[in-house]
Length: 395
Image (tube, rainbow, N blue to C red; front, top):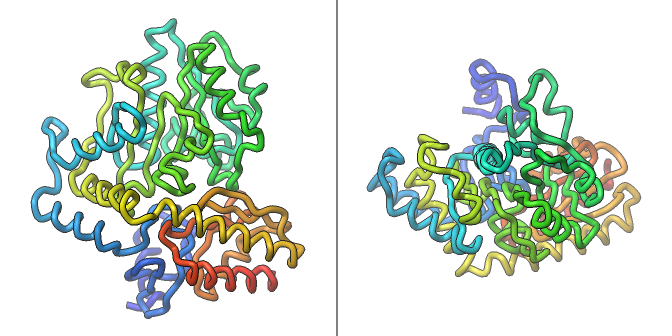
């Protein structure tokens, strides 16, 4: 089939909820994608930070095939080796955590919200969660209600109650928002969908930890986009040396297969007793096997070191480009999560990149977001930089 034929077939059958490019992708290899007509694209988007080891990674592919040939699904009434091993690995990386496995970032954040509510129910009926403006936590009704972007709320009101929003990177605003019924503070260490926004106050996360400890609140970090090595460390919060009570993961965890996880301290997790929550496909053996292969690659293939090194190189080169092109406000990010804030809307620049064979993403109106594979090479970085430079010059 041609691109046009696949697009026509899709538009005739799917709900029109995605603003898809008129391209049908057929296969991928490493940092490259190929459409049904054979054109190749350098992928600096990774399916929205999902295929962080690139496409058709040999170790991940082998793990998926081997597990699929043995067992694809059983009910959570039983254990599987793959889910047990993955839970143990995530527990270790978090630090003696207790893990809930599910299918997506929205489900992981929903689990964190429910855990906080359940934890607060035995502490004087505390239920309200403080979240940040400009945040993004998911598409379920509860995670939409936690999301601090009005555009995602339109048409879905009334949303569930129990969320109070304050400006990001403003510890005083969090303190002022606390009430007797506040149970938790939930934030992204780096706001991805909001435009790759980092705390400018280096003590922001540490201050949240101190405030939550003082007031007896849970601290929840949404690491759905920033986790699993995207910033050069397994959890982004490691850059600040602050550990939450609950962390959520998804996206890159299985390099393309659906999976999510909420990891909590034993004290917080104790609120989730038998029957309190569940997920039919949570802990799917094939997804868990894929995730274990991802974790193995992060540990043994120098992926995190490469992410930090090549991510730093990209940011440095982009800042040099910005000095020569008066269309960039700022380049910011950590590791392979990079935002280029423009003086104009970013969608046309993303489209110009696509036409030249580079996949990037426009977010927050005027931010070009780069989410390359963590194992990107220097040559591939230069290839992408050349396209970005031309696209910015023509914008």
